[in-house]
Length: 191
View 1 (cartoon, rainbow, N blue to C red):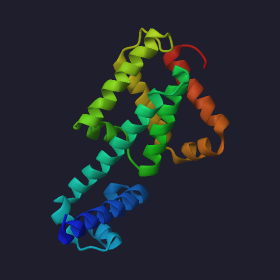
View 2: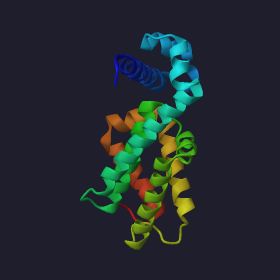
View 3: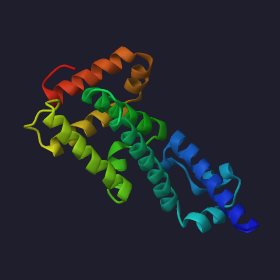
């Protein structure tokens, strides 16, 4: 890689870091290309040359988040813990990511369905649901779609209510109780 290519790659990474910081603080819809350019120390033209448009930069940002979710999900699946603890870990991880990066759960679902990693997450999660039903941890009479919708409702409810998210961080007992109530809904048993 010559000097020009190194500078171009460095510039692209500076833009990504600036966009990530601004998007996670304010939300992608409230950040302009000019804001990103100022933060990254580049011109707006440099952003357009590297990413084509703000939409492409937002897509790049969402792909980073989807990859992070996939990585965490893979890590959680291999935990040597109970099914319920794995599901709770997955939910908490997803809520933390949505909170940190100011994303809407529904938006990430829509974005992830377009790429292989998102499809991998969905496929793996369906296998995880199947395993839970086979082990008796999830009600077998519920469709996968109902379980996924219920999980999405729970995640959206928490991530879209900063007061609840903050209180869960301050009070681990509340977090445990809410996750227990959640689990009762799909398992029919208290955890």
